[in-house]
Image 1 (cartoon, rainbow, N blue to C red):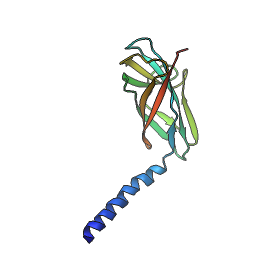
Image 2: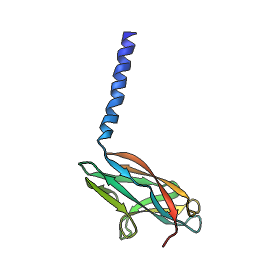
Image 3: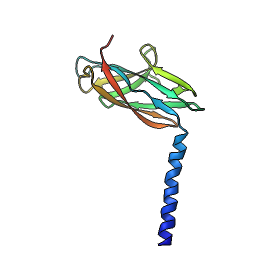
Amino acid sequence: MKTFLRRAALAASVLVIPSTALAAINITADNGTVWQTSKTGDTTQGFLQIHNTGDTADMLTAWDCPIADTTTLAGGDGKPLQSLTIPPGQTVTLASGGPHLMLLNTHFTVEFGSLVPCALTFQNAGQIGVYLNAVPAP
């Protein structure tokens, strides 16, 4: 019984360590917007803000919006980016004319007011989920 209790206490302490380590990660992302589409298979763009309130930079390394065959991160010139650094103490805005998400070959029409779930993966912070609210394209 004592051995079981010691092992349980050890396991509990190990489970606490990762959550303590993650508490130092200070990346958050606001829910954002995505342009509505007129038909299935269209390409659309997604926008949001990423905040780093920590003392060290983190890097956005992966992104996925499962309503599309492919989600890419594009620069302001439209060329794909491999990653995006989020400097410490700063906010990076994914916006039209700057870095933004490209949702290629959507599986259905993105209708005004609908919510599109996406996942952002950071080198240190791990995965963060966001929702993009569909709005009319300009």
